Length: 274
Image 1 (cartoon, rainbow, N blue to C red):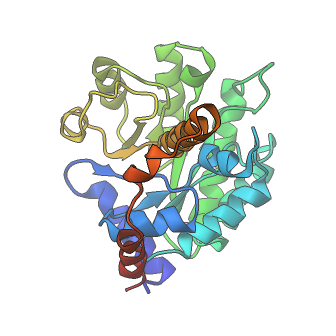
Image 2: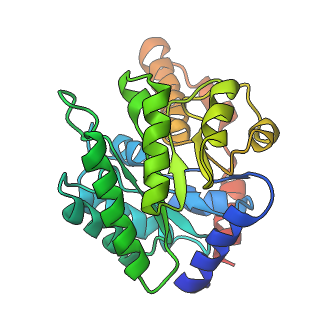
């Protein structure tokens, strides 16, 4: 197994080599192992996928960190942790979650400017920047080269102000963030505009972008990292509900024809252990 330092160095190298890379989002150890067996180079946790697993609309910081640890221990791949807002409004309290994520095995993690309160969904600009400053300080104090991602969440909360989003990303970059992220961008032209306005690697999440876009197109637009957030979890739940509706509404079980063969699954898990 790779050491955490080796994982951290590999993760950083992915961000400086030419072109974009795909970082899929498992939601537990099993899905992490399957993705590792397929040859992906890094993984990212998803708080939405975890919430779906727990049957909850929200997840606690402790649950996020426990999930991070399970996924980090499941394979040799570097893991980036979705840490939401760090579990606190106050900058230093939120930044402490970066340290805890590293202790859980992550080699990267994100802090976002979404408050978790729908009455005031986005932190004021000055506080958002202060929170990134605090997170950068913690990340730089760690014994590994932890990749800090700063997220501007405007578009997920109906604030489609591209100028403000870019202003936030630029301020987060100036504060020392290693990767920048603005979930909710959909069109390729908008993505190009954002990427051209910043100087650090940009993460695009495909759960909200135009699904016809390809990795090659996004790479040509300057995107460095492509994640999918909770999309795979939601797709899996769609299949689960389809099976359940067939049984409940029709009393039939034709979905079993499309099951993954047990041997294929076991072989994939075994490959991830090698």
